[in-house]
Structure formats: structure tokens, C-alpha cells
Length: 269
Image (cartoon, rainbow, N blue to C red):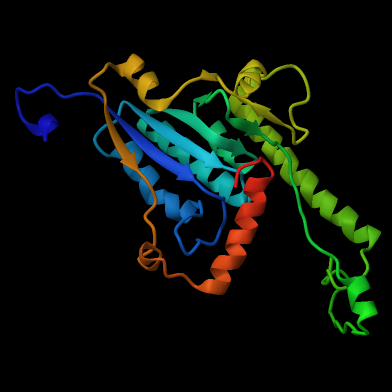
């Protein structure tokens, strides 16, 4: 209430948006997925409520959907420009792949000395069951209108032309990712290929221009705005059922396996 009382000093406020989880177009049952629909109201409030001095993004994500990463990043930039509020990203355990895309939406990026950052690439993974089906005597019957409708069908032998089509798609998405990073980081990036899908730990990420320094939210903002700076922390709410440990078992199990696989790439699970 202090800021609304005449005669009393108003302390500077920093809006903090926690962005933790896999980036996915469909929400997880426990509210742990990041997507544009879920984050939109939080970001709107962060930039527009109470005239904040800055917006801080606390990022801990191994990535996920490239489209959702792009949508969230674009929303952050639009709001930052509309409100003329500077944005800072603070990377925690991991800001990789789509997680790093989100970090690049900020004006400055700060990491912990052990944060894992980068993975500027595109990956597609699946399984093939053609050999198993032959062994079990199972016949696959698929009828399509369009010769490429069953591209990369896991129940038949992999075709070279299918793989090349997939790589064509990946090349486009990878170029979009590179354009985003280069557009946001500019001449801060080291003069070498940083777009191989490689990851870096904190100090190396700073050295190569993927981050601006080693820093943590509270001491950084206190140094910038004074010891009396206030923090307005915003985060996605967990679903009603998940608060009581009740989730849809099958859907939750599948989502959990997919999420764990993404985190496991970086030794975090």
C-alpha cells in the first residue's frame, strides 16, 4: 500500500516472471509446461502493472517447441517495446535450446557459474519398429492419398527421401533460431560457429557472448536500484487436481517421460 499513500516514499519495483519447465503447446496436468497461452497473462501483468523499473525472467528450461519459444519471445519483445521497460534474463540450471531462445528475448542475460546454456540447434527423435513387426509376423496396412502422407512412419523401414525432407524442415527452423540469436545478441557473440547445438557452462557462455555476466536476481537488482527494491514475483499456477496429487495417469506418465528425456540431455532430472 506504500506507493498509494501520499507523502510516503515509493520504492522501485521489479516484476519477476518464473519460466520453469519444458516448452510445450499443450499444458501439462501439473501446470509445468511453458507456452504462450499460459504465460501471456503473466507477461502482460509483469510489464504493465505498477510501472516496474524492470522485468526479470527467471529461466530454467531444456527447451521444447520451437513455435511456442518464438511466440513467447515475440510477446516479451512486443511488451518491452510498448512499455519501454528493460528486460533481464537470469538463467538457472538450464537455458538450452528453446530455453535459450527465451533468454535471448531479454536485453541482457545473466547466468550462474554452473548454468548450462546454448544448444542452438534442432533435434527430432523417434523409434523404428519395422524389424520387430517382421519378427512377430505383423503386417502393416496403410493407405494414403498423397505419396508423402505417411512420412517417417515408425512401423516401416526408414526411407532416405523421408530423412532428407525432415532435414529440410530442420534447416529452416535452425536458421530461424540462428537469426533470432544473432538479431538479439549482435556483435556480443564470439566470432566462431556457436550454432552447432553445443552447450556451455556459465563462464564460457559469458566468454563467447551468449550471456552478459555471472549474476543472480536479488543482488543484481539491489545494486542497480538500491537495497529497498521490491519484487513482484509471478508464476504459473498449478492445476486444482495436481495440488492434491491427482492427475490423469496415462497422460501424465507420457508427459513425464518426454520431459525427463529433455532434462536428461543436460544431466538434470
